[in-house]
Structures are given as C-alpha cells and as structure tokens.
Amino acid sequence: MTDLRLVLKSLSARSTSTVVTCLLIAIAVALLISMRSLREAGRRSFTRGVGNAHLVVSGDSSPLVAVLNGIFYANPPRAPLPESKVTEIASSMPWAWTIPTQLGDSFRGFPVLGTTPAFLDDFEPAIGEPWRIRRPGRNIEGPFDVVLGSRVAAATGLGVGDRLFLTHGMGVDAAGGEVGIVDDPSATVEAEGDPHDGHDHDDHDD
Image 1: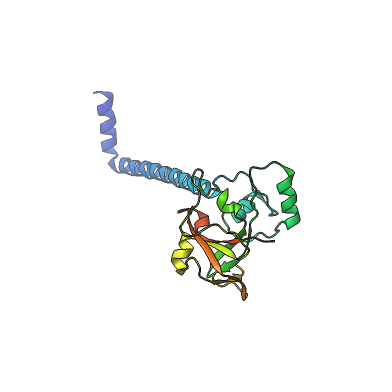
Image 2: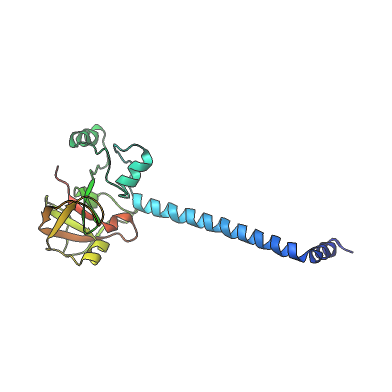
C-alpha cells in the first residue's frame, strides 16, 4: 500500500474532522486575503487624499491628528496656528509652495475650507492629477470667492454666480447664524474619490 493510499484511507476514516479542518483552513485564508485587501484599499485612499503634500504643520497634539484634521478634515484644529506663525514658517525655508488652511465654518453640513488660490494651483489631491475646474468657473481671487467640490455642487444645485450663506461650526446641526455672504461661487472643481471633493474652498484672507 502506497503512502498516498494510506493517507486517503486515514482521511476517509475521519471524514468529519477532515471536512471541518478543511473548512477552517479555507476560512482562515479568506480572512487573511480580505484583511490584505482592506489594508491596500485604505493605503490607496490615504495616499490619494494626501496627494503631493509632503509636510503638514499643525498645532494639534499628535502627527496623526494633524493629518486627519489638516488633510482629511476630520475636525477643526484645536490649536490653530496664528497668521504670524504661518508667515514665519513660510519664509523660513525655500519651500516649493506653502498653503495655509483653516476649517471651522460649514454650508448645509459641508465643511468650508478657508485657503488661498495656491490650494488649487499647486496642491494635487492625487499625484499627477491636478484639479479640474469646470468652465466658465475660475480659481478663487478675492475674499468673497468660493469654489465648490463637485459633490457639493451636485447636492446643493449651486452654480457660478449663486449666493450662499456660511454657518459657523461644523456639521448639519452646527450652531450659529449666517456669518458671511459669498456673492460669486467661482467654479466647481472635480477630484473624484478623495476627501477634498466634498468641501467648499473659500478664499482665506486673514
């Protein structure tokens, strides 16, 4: 009797335990593959949101919180940097570009990001994929210009030339009154599949 026949005979004599063992192995392999797939999907999403940003400067308590708040807009920063500090940092090194951002207001539950025209000129939400501005829209130029993410534009129905009122605070139930009037939404930008698409980008004029 060959070794293979001995193995098969032994397995058939313990058919129940053999089937259970095979099922457990299959489940373990499936779980391992799923975990690897989820990890890779998370890595791709994280990379896409960061884009060509190489350094985040923040007053937040930890690097993780700084990235979550500064890049993925999880919450307004608890310790925002004053304008004088931002200017000091921007002039301290020959950076390729520096972009100040500020989070805190919202519009119909969508966060509003206060920033400068460099956000759309220099920052790429995904490496090699710059912002795509729908014509006849344009980049922000003045203190009351705003650029809408394509998901915000689709959800609100706003377009170039419409007026909107911003609310102080984040989220649908944000407390506060109307704190600013934007006379001219300048453009709608598209960067599908990244966290920046679901935001209003308002001119930052501190």
